[in-house]
Image (cartoon, rainbow, N blue to C red; front, side, top):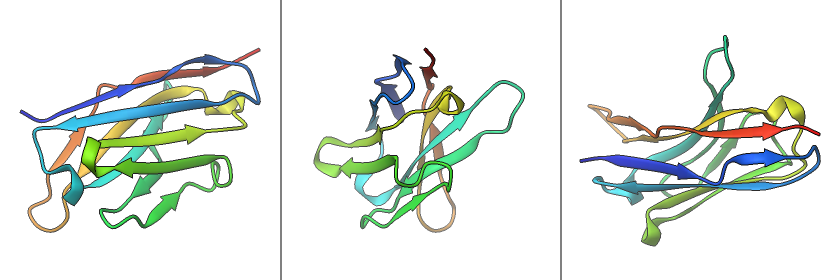
Length: 118
């Protein structure tokens, strides 16, 4: 049974930091592309950051220079370090695992709320 469990969300003041974690199980974590997405009410889910199995990184323009994605394959965990948070970063953040190749398997976590407010 595949599971992705996010943690680390919460309420933070503008300019503050949070670190999200996503623990994967039930699949070969090290071979999957791991990504973070976010969604606000009424909007489509958007990609925030992604990391390939060998470590190549990809970021949305809105978070470049502020967010850092990393992975620990030994712990089957992907992280999202979020610094200099802004109110517009407020969203539910989701972890996604995608297999490489065909057919592609895709799994989502349940999401964790991040609220940036003074």
